[in-house]
Image 1: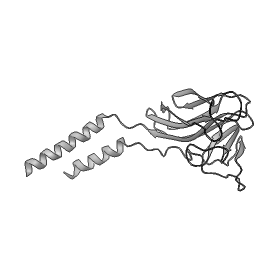
Image 2: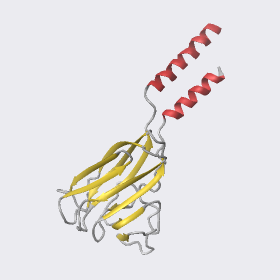
Image 3: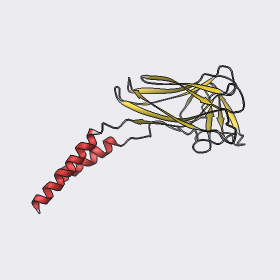
Image 4: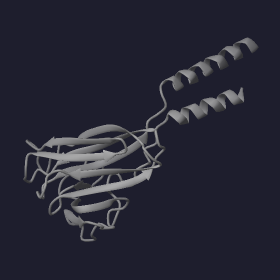
Amino acid sequence: MKKIFLALIVVCFAVSPSWALIMNGSFELGNYPVANPPLTTLNTGSPDLSGWTIGGSIDWVGSYWPAADGVKSIDLAGTGFGWISQTFDTVAGNLYHVTFFMAGNPAGGDPIKDLFVNAGSNASNYSFDITGKSLFYMGWEQKLFDFTAISNKTTLTFVSLEGSSPFGPALDNIQVAAVPIPAAAWLLGSGMVGLVVIRRRKVS
C-alpha cells in the first residue's frame, strides 16, 4: 500500500511544471541606481541586470511606465538596437514552455514593435502595436511558445528588431518550464488510486 502511494507522489511531481529555470525573469534584481531614475540605460557587457547577458543597448525601466509584473521591465532599445540572453540547464530532447509579457515603448518610433526570440529548436518573431497605448497604459500581452532542447544547456535570447530606434519592444515576466509528461501519466495515477480503493474495499 505504501509503495502505491509513493508511486502516486512521484507521478504528481513528474507532471508538475517548475518555473525556476530562468533567473530574474521580471527584472527586479540587480544594481539599479540608488537615485532610482525612471529608467537607466545598460550597454554591452553590463553586469548590473542580475542573471542576464546584455548586448547593444537596452533600458532597464523603473517608474517610466507600469510593469507587467513587479515594478521593473525592459525596453530592448536603449540608445538603439539591443538584446538580452540567459543560459540555463536543460535535457536534450525534452520539451520546454516559455511565457513572457510583451508591450512597446509608446513614446515614439514605429507603431509596430518587432521582437525576435530564439531558444533551442525555436526561433520566432513577435509584434506589438502601440496604437492607443501610453506611458500610463502599456497594454501588456502574454506571449508563449515551446521549444525542444538540443543540448544540456539552452540560451534564451530576446532581440529588438527596431534597428537604430531608441523606442523598442518591451519585455517583462519571462518564465520557462519543462513541459509536463503527457496526460497519460494522470490516467496512470487515477488508475492506481482506483486500485487502492478497490483493494481496501475487498479487505474490509
